[in-house]
Length: 574
Image (tube, rainbow, N blue to C red; front, top):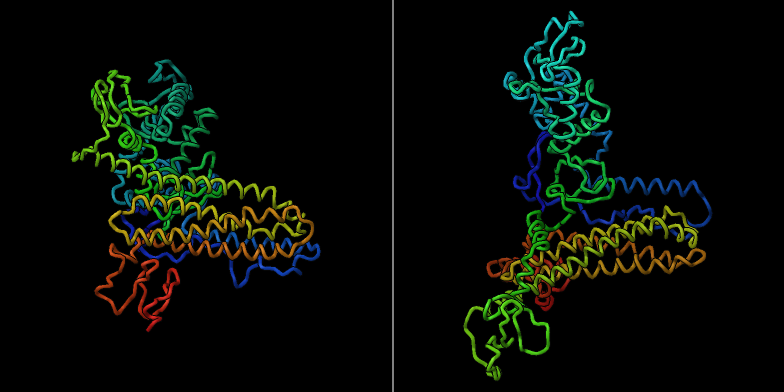
């Protein structure tokens, strides 16, 4: 599906999948990124003559700008934020709340943490009922600090935790006025930071009956440098994880966060570390599959359900103890390892006195039907899983090959062909297209597994679109993987390299188009056909005709199928 929301939302609101309606997105997420009208990669042989480093640098800058523009187009709904940018935004939000509500920055930080870092929610709640908000977050209306402590720093005060006597300059308190020595405060804060994790951000006064909040000002003045760093990290994590518009990149060791608005309903995002994932479920990008079906598929792959199907399909129960037994020897004489019962594998009769069981006797019980259904279910799952897994592995290898080509083979190619490395961006685009299309093909097999068996027309249409896209992808993958190698050890500019460039760019474009059609068709539920292979053809005979090859319902005004290009034979004969 392609969900999108047409309602204008505040920056703090989240786009839930259940609240979003389908629309047609105008962005081609499987585009190759080439501009046919002005492509710096289509160069004549004269462009490669000479050694003009300035021209090469200028071309490189143009290509980089094109790449950035393409990335912005594909990711116009999300922003990638570094740790420094996150801290800057957090400080800006704190300063804004502090200014609007006329409170200190420490109090503003406490308010934002309690309202999931939503500036608008804090403001709305504060101006609706300030007293209720203060009570909820632990901010006292008036500070209750003993005047004696301020006026007489040498006054002896007993700590409320250790009950030892301290001069007043060694005593600290929160806004509630409960007095404790600095040592007890430091231990209390350190224990919370190291034991409670992110819970230390909601630290309250040590007095059990008091709910006064402990601000970051006390943390900074009483905690050790190590604990202050931990607290700062917890605060930053809270800013990302509690904020509904931001999430951490799920890649290991990646420190970037993604801010997402989802204006066009596409939930695929790509971090600066090149990790792509779905914003909704945080799994890898899985268009055209929806998140719930992906969850079911992943759960199925990791569960024991298929083991049960295997037992039902290839094992037989012992006639005595009913334990499942798998045959692993040639003869039919079986002995159960559990109860030592001896029986015939074919007829499950007792082996003692067994003569033969070659006579056919029709069975009407449900056991055979159950075993047959289990076997067919296992075979269907195996078919789709093998192809899903093969494309998943091919995607991972293509990603690794792309990096190796950029790091190693571009240099060899530049030397052998006497061409600047800046001119090889079309090869990178081809590899990236392979990775994206392998991902789409991978999840299309999961889609096929869950496609209902009682809709043969949709299944036929799906397999046609999938087959066409897969065939084109194999050509592109073979071209960028195998045909490139012949130019690595050739000295001097080869005319064939120009032909190879033209071919590869063309295949990249065509493959992207095929997969965009496949993805859109699957996201729309293959709505172009119904369970009978037509789209209301019986009722609208004069308005459309159904293609004999792919079952697509075409307007009667055209002669060739809009999907596969096949001619309408009836229309031609007329």
